[in-house]
Amino acid sequence: MESFRRPNQAEIQFLNMSYNKFYDVFEEAFKEEFWKEDAMYRFSKINIAFSIYSELLNYEPIKWVLKEMKERRPPMEAEIGSELFKFIRNVLAHFPYFESWNEVWINKSIVNWHKPGLTIDRFLSKYTGREEIKYRFWEADKKKMTYLSITFPESYSDDTKIYLHTILSEKDGVKFSLILMKQIIDTQVISI
Image (tube, rainbow, N blue to C red; front, side):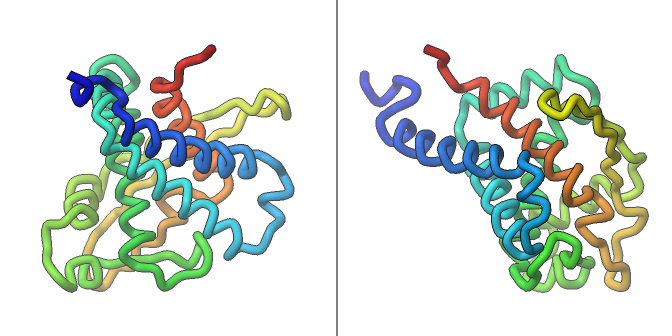
């Protein structure tokens, strides 16, 4: 009977490690000093946050949250919180040649060097040419509203470099991403 309870012992251990590190990165990214750090340092922390979040997407209760978001939240919010963030994580993981967010680029030929139709290729095939999505977020401690756009590539070909920073800007885009990630994973936190 114990194996059917959620979270089980292995999940508790995984979730504690994941949440603790994610929250550490989240808190650091919302300090102005973080954005004055070396680009490679920022990039490594951002990479960690996207990697942890991507792993957390495998936890069944988070999948339920995303399913609910598709039905009840604004259009594309669930897709951003799942497909886009997983796409970014996969680009960072599979093409670890870059030292800053603004350097990262891909094209169809390198995405499909091994086999077409995998996650990155599917994402770009599905979303290329889509209209940009506008978001905003509030930073209460700064009393500041930030507006940003998520821009999908106009074309996806062997000859077209798609830069990550043109899809999602480093500072505002990453802060927005972390906020949405946190909102999604916080649904699994029990307040005492």
